[in-house]
Picture: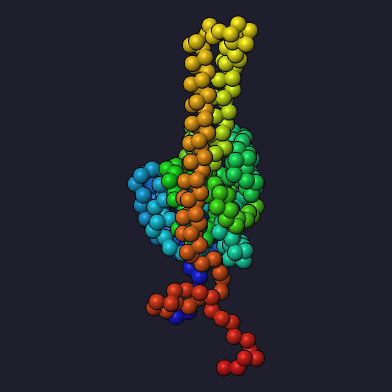
Length: 332
């Protein structure tokens, strides 16, 4: 049986009755073949009613936080291309077709709608500075293939979604997505998309300092888990430096007098150097474990086909694959 590639749109929402209807209508106009899911995240307004009236399938995630919504949606929704976009109408939903087309044409595992501010006040100064700092930190630690790490407008292949662990709870989920793609070296592309002021009556849920600190903590934690040899080498180097600073006077006294008058300092310096060696050794052990985990994640990723625009066939026990294209000269 021949089937067309499936497309799904996921719209996380918390109190977005002022904008979610327009977002859903724009998505349905841009991608009429797609199924639009609105995941309501404990809204207290008319978000659910407005989304249903606009033609979306509404599902609920009672645990607050965008990361919890993404975790649930990635587990529930099965599609060849899965697009996520915020329900506040700050992103240009009419560009959804461009993102999906590029995903299939690549083929890519992730296409990011990099934000281009079109309205004054759409992007607060604190958010802009924080985004640049955090993006710079990720580029330094994991690679240079990203310019807008915190964009909430993305489309993913099935194999990205099914290999993504989705451990974040709140706004740090975009950071987790970016690092997942960078660390596995998944093919990623970006498209500039307009970013505008929220619809009247909407309120931003992002808190500059609180969420910025949370995202920074996630980056540091991911660096510890994904680059353990680097982190532990730095820590071991700091400890070794402290040990050397403490030990130099002890060594000088011993060379000059043949005695060790500062026994406690000598013991402390030796202990810190021993700890530094152990920290370095643990880092290399964790690096080996990380490579094993990375290989397993990569194998899960490779167990799914690349996104293709060509219709596929399905047969009982046959799986899926591209349909051979018959040329006119081949005859019937």
